[in-house]
Length: 458
Image (cartoon, rainbow, N blue to C red; front, side):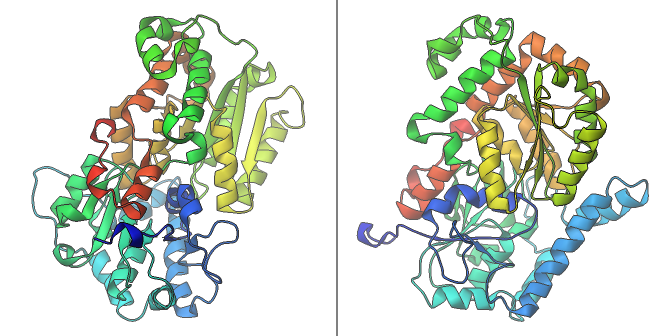
């Protein structure tokens, strides 16, 4: 272990531009990212392994091939017969094996062998050589392939890999797991146990929780989070049913100001619907808007449609809102969230979340945002890992499967009237991890490895 004087204050934060999940996981760490001229993204210091200045064309071709195939197939999934068939092949290759019975799952898959074949032909070496020529700071990656780069090309500093789902496939683990020096920063106990089945040594696994945005938490006092959650509960419990029944719990965790029967009738119920990085499920956003049309025009509901960085999704939402006569009206409480870059999108999205009452999304990495006290309505899953995320989210008490979206204007308000949504918000706050960003910094930069494991939150 390094002495206290040798512990660095910064790290190389490395991610990949594929969907949103891997970049969303490192956004909360941007303030500890060491800026590397020519490699880091402007303003954030984070390195995109597949889109940095000076990346060899051969490396870029390897990355682009995989990303474009994934996004194309994800968008095709909704097509009758052929879409599910094609997506099913890709999903099978990336599948997560059943956890039980407990057994040795350390044998590398075909996918892992293919990745290593490309790495041993030079994939990723340029990036690691550049970092090796500089100060040997900790290398933190949110993608397994880039962690493999660092180990296989002999990065001279410590290597960390952030796992971004509630369970993970064998693809996250190198060819020879028992010999690997990669340290894993995992979101929950299941991933820790899964890595054990894959052959990773226990001392290389740290249960930190998923890194949530610090601006939605407010430091060790949780000032921002408690304030947002307290107001959210009053919005989600119009008759005070939940607040009356669980008054003592609210007192203990949020204070006494949020347990009254006062309901802010001037606050529209705020729903944020987020599509994935491939733009799939955008039609669901249109259906939700149509079902809630009357509530929106009356000012009872504010709907945020999240287009992310996809201009095609943004234009689609503009068109459908115009057709519904919901655009360009001061009394029409509907917004489209769009940004030019992913990190600017994350910043805007996190600001919107502080005013959001209900988050509606497929169970992607956003499942972990239940830890911010957000009740989550789960859209249909896309891929094996999201099936596991759905199970985990439901187990926290914060997530529930959507009913028929055509009738959102009916079942959503039944849930609201019962106080169930307020309960789901509080269950997420109590049961899901929320301090992942701080814990990762403690492990990597403060040498507090043995102290990190918020088991009661996971």
